[in-house]
Each structure stands twice: as structure tokens, then as C-alpha cells.
Image (cartoon, rainbow, N blue to C red; front, side, top):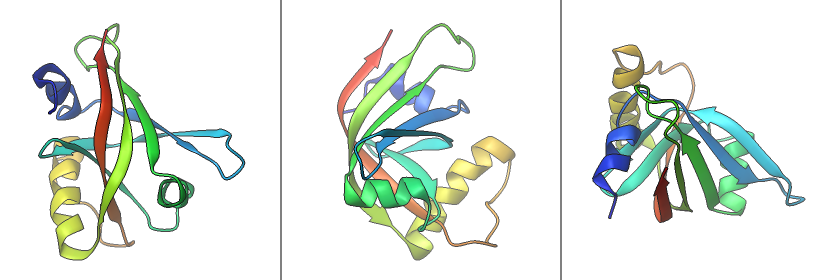
Length: 125
């Protein structure tokens, strides 16, 4: 279950930094838009991006972010991708996330998927 304080940050407009593992085991970190879907964390990505390839090969992930109203309070979560959404199911989540960041739906110019992350660890410092 998501901690309510952490959910508030995840559902805000902070940019998260997602760390995944490259094929050689080295870390790969990128900024991502983030949201929640039930008790899971949702991120969007192109199907052929490095992060998507990393997460499909090894679903372990770490995310860090800070609340927009308190940049000195870190939120760190770890977990694994347990489900991928594509098509209409993905676009419903993508548009909800996009609306909170840019005020409207995401462009349909490129294919996008949603990775749903089940959390193993959640820390708010």
C-alpha cells in the first residue's frame, strides 16, 4: 500500500528520476513524468527507448523525487515493473499524467506505453 504522504508527492507535478540497469549492470538514470494507478506507480515511455528496453529485460527500478513545495524532503521508492499497458488502456493513464504536467492530453505523434511499478520500499526523508 502506498504511504499517503508519498502518494501526494507522486500525484503532484514533481519530476522523478528513474534508475534502471543497462545490460552490463551499469545504472541508467532519466527524468520522467510520474503518477499513480491504484497502489502502483505509473510512468510513460516509448516502447523502443533505452529505459523501456532496460525495464523489460530487468524490471527492477528505483525512483527519486522531491515535493515541489519542499525540495529538501527526498522521496525514494524501489520496486519492479509488474505490468505494461499499451493501446487505449495506456493512453487513459498517459493523458491523466500529461494533464497534471501540461494541462492537456499527450501528443499522439508517437507510440507510448505505461509501466506499472509495484513498490518494495518507500522512504520519505
